[in-house]
Amino acid sequence: MTVIDISPSVMQFLLAFIVVAPLLGALAALLPAPPGLRGRNPDQAVLRHGVTVTGAVLVAAIVLAAGFDHDHPATMQATTDISWIPALDVRIHLGIDGISLPLLVLTALLTFLCALYSYFKLPEGPSPKAFVALVLVLESGTLATFAVLDLLLFFLAFEMVLIPMYFLIARWGGDQRQAAAWKFILYTLLGSVVMLLGLLLIGLKSGTFDMVALATDNGCGLTTSVQVIAVLAIGLGLAVKTPMWPLHSWLPDAHTAAPTVGSVLLAGVLLKMGTYGFVRILLPVAPDGMRTFAPYLAAFAVVGIVYGSLACLALARTGAKGDLKRLIAYSSVGHMGFVLLGIATMTPTGVNGALFANIAHGLITGLLFFLVGAVKDRYGTADLDTLAGATGAALYGRAPRLGALLAFAAVASLGLPGLAGFWGEMLTLFGAYSPAEGLSRPAFRTFMAIGAFGTLLTAAYMLIVVRRVCMGEHAPHSRLSPDEQPQQAPRTADGPQPSGTAGSQPSGAAGSPSLETAGPRTATTPQLADIHPYEAAAWTPLVALTVLAGLWPAVLLGLTDPAVQQLLAGGKS
Image 1 (tube, rainbow, N blue to C red):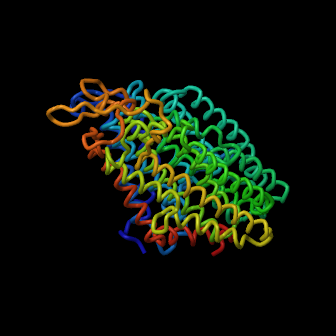
Image 2 (cartoon, one colour):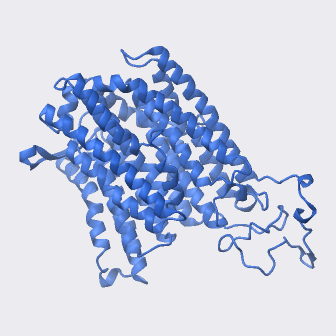
């Protein structure tokens, strides 16, 4: 069944266009704008160019999804297979199935929303031309990763995103951006070198780099020792990008320093490239090697779930001076732990849960980073103690719609039933209850129990964040010295004025009252700017899809389940 009937040649063109168009758009962004498209100034013209290109790619992705044959999601569709380097048997092989299609559409959507957001709220930094070009190159590399079906092309696409993200952090980031960018590039490059050795080992030992042929062969052409070495090498490179504990330490620094759109793209799509590699390459190509390492992968995954949650609890406590962006970054370590646990079960239930959790994390954490960026813009800080309202009013009182949306994203992230975050975690735990044949059931049921405990910790820190940031908190007066007690606001003919606001320039962010002097909330506490129209345009699709995936999970599972069943069966339905 297809929503619209599209010929195979048009489907091929659409997929090729989705991969190549952002790259061509990046080159065009660096050229002078034609006279009729310059707008009010060159900066506006190039930002509009970014919105146009990413919008065209999103439309093409939606049309491709509409033309996709949903009755046969396990079949590779929109395929292109052209010889590129005959001596190495490297081919330009593109195609999509039920596993890659949702990730392709998610990438196109998030990149378009980031381009739209940047059109109105460009991060401070060098030329907008460079910013737009880097975002488009990043989009092209990510889309290619999910569309290519050749191991060497996969590696090239996998590496293509590193340089754009490095410069987005290093040139448009915040405090400590240089150190964070270097840490990001060094970790990922070192992991990629090891991964390349594993990919070459598989290609040379099997005689082909074609991912479809390798998946159909299901490891029959590779000895167990070769599979074990390949899984160890490739798995290390993918684990760094995922990121898996203890290879995660680059992630909090990168998220904290990155601009808002950089954090959205890093969490929403770049982390998915690692877990996608586990599902697309290691599970079908080296099943014996995966079975050897599956218990260790699951153990690292559940440690990551608990570790990420405990780190978030430590950051969320009063007086810890925790950064809200850093907290959301650590939450990603925990959420991606659930994805890895589902993959480690090597069962259709667990892998489907992992793929569902991938999409849910992209939607929810992308929304969270958008919201935290907006809060930081208004307050001038992401420090939790400051945002908690110990010296000022909380979000519910100052920007109620923004506060309500932050609370929605938080409860979606903790896995509230009826929202997208619930199904991935539940299916992952079900998969761990009954892992694949040959895996220890007692061990995996222990991992399931630890993962379930991690969901409680997730709920704890997310609710603490909502209470502190949205509802606020006030230090007990008995603990304050007389000099630290809030001063009574002087009365005027117009009523009481909040202390520290009359005739003074805000110190936090433009247009917002100083957090250092705002005092406890009163009826006349000045409001922050609530949700702007461009913010609503960028965030509404993520909210709607989070609800849709939570209420109608069959939309995703109907695509992924047949493809996963066939992948785990070695290409046989």
